[in-house]
Length: 323
Ligand SMILES: Nc1ncnc2c1ncn2[C@@H]1O[C@H](COP(=O)(O)OS(=O)(=O)O)[C@@H](OP(=O)(O)O)[C@H]1O
Image (cartoon, rainbow, N blue to C red; front, side, top):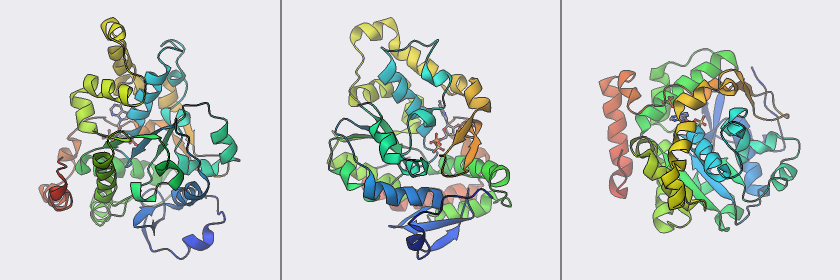
């Protein structure tokens, strides 16, 4: 099994409630949300040591909600005047290597130096729930983009992802979809419960729409052009009417499409390494599976679909949020 760095937080971690892990042997509950140790160490680190800049552009997601896609779009929107598509950084780097998860930087040799060396405006990401975000970020003018997705597709995507890592990386026995389903329903998933994660950012976006922009993966699929324009405007890189006429939005959409990104050599055979202080490494192709909406209908039984719908209705009913 791949080992993780056992840092100063080991004492805290050993006191936390634990349950079955997905892409790890165990998940731990910290501030009402569940994590594998490799993330949890970083959540605690980020709460203590992460220093936001007002100019930061921050992507927050529950895993499997479209992080890779949104990272690519944000990179391409921000870089569009500096690089063309024949020498673009996304041709040779996976989006996760360009836009780091702040909670995984703890596994770099010197995370503070790493962050300080990034030019402003920094593109950063996280799976940390809103209620556990570092104060420095909450108190800053950092803009936060959040992507949610319907829980049925998230569950199937997360299960498929974890299955690949369980056997290949962690040498753990398979976790059946039924076992994953039960864990997901009771909230045990990376940064789960899913519903509480989404609600935290949804409420923050209602309270402060200038700070938090809330998107759904499904909207991004159905109206990619509209969403990309809104995203560009929110992060401070709006498209001019000239650019729109010249097809700049369409170019970015095509370049960041599932078909294009998943066919790049770096995303087919490249490796994602969480950081030199851990041996957590896996193939970039695990970030690309189908990229569709509604795939869960083919994998989950009618009973499972119904139960997930019921939980979603119970949790989101009063919020106005629908999937
Ligand atoms: N460019 C693009 N367009 C559309 N969809 C895409 C794209 N890139 C990745 N994907 C799909 O997104 C799912 C992975 O979610 P995340 O990127 O959030 O995963 S992670 O949290 O970063 O591990 C996963 O969804 P599923 O296919 O349903 O498993 C990926 O296939």
